[in-house]
Amino acid sequence: MPRFFVNEIDESNIVLTGSDANHIGKSLRMRPGEEVTVCCCGTDYSCEIERITADEVYLRLVEKRLCAAEPGVSVTLFQAVPKLDKLEFIIQKCVELGVSRVVPVLTRRCVSRPDRKEFGKKLPRLMKISEQAAKQSGRGIIPEVTQIVSLDEALAEASTLDRTILLYEEEGGCRFGDTDLSGIRTAGLIVGSEGGFDKEEAEAAVRAGAVQVWLGKRILRCETAPITALSILMFLTNNM
Image (cartoon, rainbow, N blue to C red):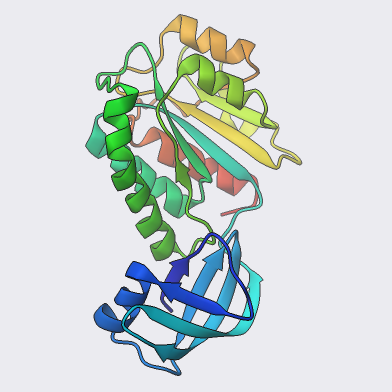
């Protein structure tokens, strides 16, 4: 069933407009009586099309329920900025796996070093990738991709979460399965770019409360590591 996202909803008068209405009427060629799902803030609204005009689609609410695809833990991925094509891939796959937010972070070893103005021009495309992945995977929200931040800003945000995990392969780390995830509602994953983190950055993350974790003896690419870590986190919190 086609899925469409809105920021707010009036259950007695559900109307889709703009590109969504155009997509329903012209691309999908849907007709009155057919069903669509409207998603708002993690709730799925199953609706029947009542009327289609050139610019609007009028819907009748059939049923509403919490989106079963939304995990019970809200995960923020703090991803050190890799090359753009890798970041796009990371966003797509992590949205499919259940991430709630993606925060691009500029660290010392980032090969790609856009400034905020330059990165801001890329945000609409990155959010479109998130939206498409959310629709494909049946999500109840479109995970946010934020403006690029410094590591200090990322660590300040991460310190407010129930549990934050730093992927760092050097000495001092523990296995993912040994990390205490019991009862958490919010979590963060801090993942490096192509060059990883330097020692001072890793130590700063640990001082901010992050648990240093390693994923085994094989060195994973920067686009493989967040997908692997998020999959493990979802599994260990019974969301996979």
